[in-house]
Image 1 (cartoon, helix red, strand yellow):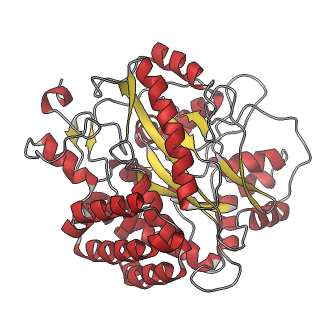
Image 2 (tube, one colour):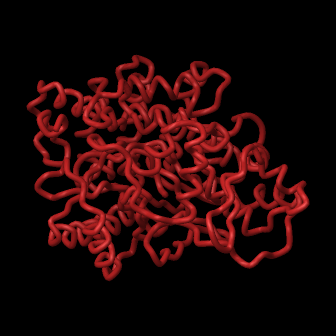
Image 3 (cartoon, helix red, strand yellow):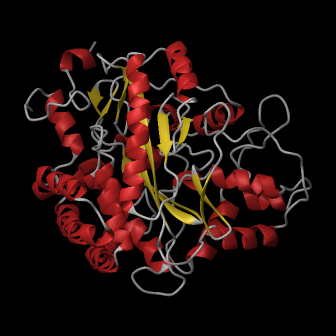
Amino acid sequence: MGGTSDAAPAIRYRGGGMVESQEDPDMSDSVSGCTERRSAVTEAEVEALVHGICFKTGPPRTLGVEVEWFVHELRKPWLPAPPERLRAVYTALRTLPLRSALTVEPGGQLELSSAPVTSLMECIGSVSADLDAVRALLAEAGLGLSGYGHEPWHPPRRFLADPRYDAMERYLDRTGPEGRSMMCSSASVQVCLDAGYEEPGPLGHGRRWWLAHQLGAVLVAAFAHSPLSRGRPTGWRSTRQSLWSAMDPGRSSAPPLVGDPRASWARHVMDAPVMCVRTGSGPWYVPDGLSFRSWTRSEAPPDHSDLEYHLTTLFPPIRPRGHLELRMIDAQPGDDGWIVPLAVTAALFDDPEAAETAYRTVKPLAERAGPLPPPRNALWVTAAREGLTDPELHEAAVACFAAAAEALPRIGASDDVQEAVAEFTDRYVARGRCPADDLLLQFHGNDTRCGGDDTRVHGKDMHS
């Protein structure tokens, strides 16, 4: 579910490289019901399988992005589209010849997930063309797309009726209301990167894994764009990120960032709670307090398909799926706002000089994180709450965006992409601001600079 629950990845590794997954028939990214049961897997086999499949190393050469959007009335973007109109237009969208995988989230959010490509510009070009086609069809139906990290106006409502999401809702409701908001009211820009080289160095998988978790806080702060919920400020620049911090830690936290990443992730997978057990008919079983490790030791242990499914129910901020899936960036304003976080992240990870600069820049921030893993540690919580008003995060963002700007020509970014990053840097990063600050100023009626329909928030509409 992209930035929300991510049932089935739109980009995954098979064998040695990224491949595009198949679209689910109902356009949700849910994993369909129980498959024919195969032989059970032992605890040792699970650890070996996870150890082997989640970090596929080699030269960083492929890139992907997943962008999520809220669908709304075109002329009144604060009004969501009725379910019957969504169903009709989503049926029509199936006929479009897109390169990206098109899926629907539990709350009706629309997600485009790129095919894996070998360059930044190829990724931007293919997704931009697909978005143009999607927007044109939606406009014919009087609908449009908006990018927010969290739906600003309305409470969560579920659009998809699916055994997976029924089970997920029951599971997440046990710990509070955040899970429903995550499922139905959040949207993100996810960047998918190769895991890196097996060897150490700026592009080594161990360095990239560590960097993703430290730089992730800077990306949260710089691209925060969800300060409102149900028409009111929440006290967070990234309300979306606050939801992840408040949810079940066994499902949404990173593993400990010490030792070998493969071994650490394998232990995390084994000790994570089982969200649900799929059944052939009727509601799926939602166990209470059952870890996957305990399940392998039970009288009815899981099989390989259960392990594959379990992996799709874990939502840490950086998820290893052969490649690295960076999940912490809020959906962005404007038709092309998603391009800036994609370009900046790709530059900071795939250009060796920029990667080294980013590593040295964020290394001192690790001391602020404390003992808890992301997204619950002090650094990530500050990033989500304060954005770039925090002096250290601001300083780090300035240095990282400068390094990215220098690297963009080296990774083939066009003049337009470089200009977009420069404009974002000038408008937000250099001034210690983020897109959420525009929404807050508009909410209080003090901002006249933001004119796009996609970012305008009218007080009278938000309070109606």
